[in-house]
Length: 416
Image 1 (cartoon, rainbow, N blue to C red):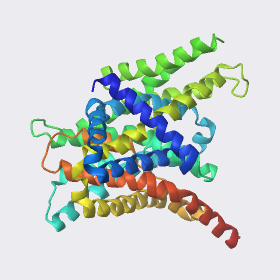
Image 2: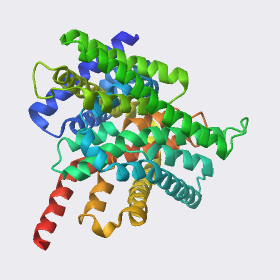
Image 3: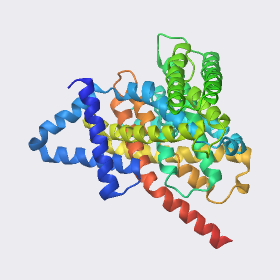
């Protein structure tokens, strides 16, 4: 199967599953896609010899489309820009301190807690992973996924203030998590002398450089878009911005995610006339909303299809289940500790901690980073833990978040 055939099959399968979910199953969009993909794979496996051709074709799709490279190098920029373009920057500014602390200090705390917890757990069950490997897992699984978070928040009656914090955190903590992940990889490399000062320099280069590049290139695009009222030109300029940002940021070794987020926030804020159907802002938001929905659907089918290429997942069921509990507990503590130090938790609305914890969904970015790890004896275990957390996050937390939000609202009304 060549690449074009694989991409065509992937898009066709995405369209079919999307139709089935919309027409019959009626689960929230991305959650339904993942569930149906997993059901398809389960049916194919249970059918055994009858469906060996189908299973082979699914495996070939995975082999032809490199999930890690496709998501991190191609799709992520489009998805982050589309998400940032829809953000209310004024609302984000009001919650900026919370977003900043959770996307930096929170990620570091979560990485350390998960790393130490997994290290103890693997030592206890007799399949030890080196501490640096456990910390790498902590770094790749700690950042919340803006794609998964955005998809679920669209369906949730979550209070606007908390929605701003959750969506803002998910946009910024990917860049921080990626820098932390790269730094730990350098530490793990025996051929490289990597010190704390090197990590600080890398963080400054990636974060400050990424945000600065995104703002500069977005301002140039804004001036060009503002001077044009042609739909085709406006859309092409925005596409060029997203694609060139990825290329330039990669060549300058600055954070692509943060560059795309900064560009989307600036462009979404500066363009006038958001409600007018003749305005550039209206063109852009409608176009990028469509791009966001299409890429989301394809991405979540790809997440489900990864099960075909990871047949060993069932060998690590118990440790994957333990990792789910560990990650949720670390998420809770990584929110609680900064809030106790900075924001006086008692002044926050009751139930905020529970909602922020449960809404911290993980998605394709964590899987892509796990798949990018160099070969090692413990890669399979890390992938199994990662996939277990992601699946529970998307399906378990995604399907029950609305119920939690409703329960918290009712308890507040009763107390009032």
